[in-house]
Image (cartoon, rainbow, N blue to C red; front, side):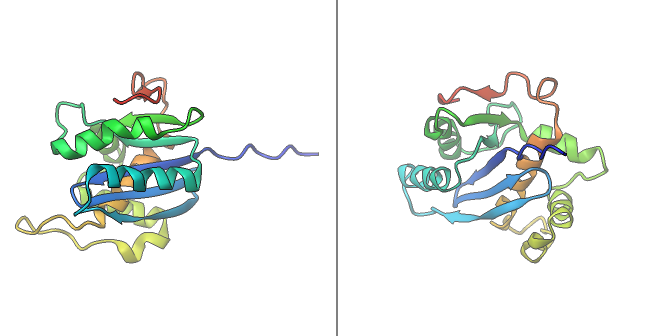
Length: 180
């Protein structure tokens, strides 16, 4: 008799931006449960946090993954930094909050020659074919970033959680549920 494999941890990956946030819910490296963008361009930060809390209540993630914007090279605006710092307080006691610098995500994907944000999004859409129709076109230097990139960024952060050895590259990045 074979023993069934333990279910993969459910990860809620978030990518806050000035207009709202992108999210992805993953169960292992191969199962994308849900994804999308929540618009909050005209909302107060409290409303944005309420939308994040609703997702936590809906999906009951084991882990919440979000960018560590304390990194020197982070270009996040102050409003987004404040939201990221408050996400840890929304987590339940059973939920781990993991902060990953964007540089770690780029480094992981860069091992395979994937360097630009569009290349990472393309690789993510190849891995999860259900996202292929959401892939934005390559951005020209004068164009603003397409909001759909937030979905691909969130998925990339989620995949990074599964692909990295958290004792080596993510040491010191775990949060205990308090603001980062």
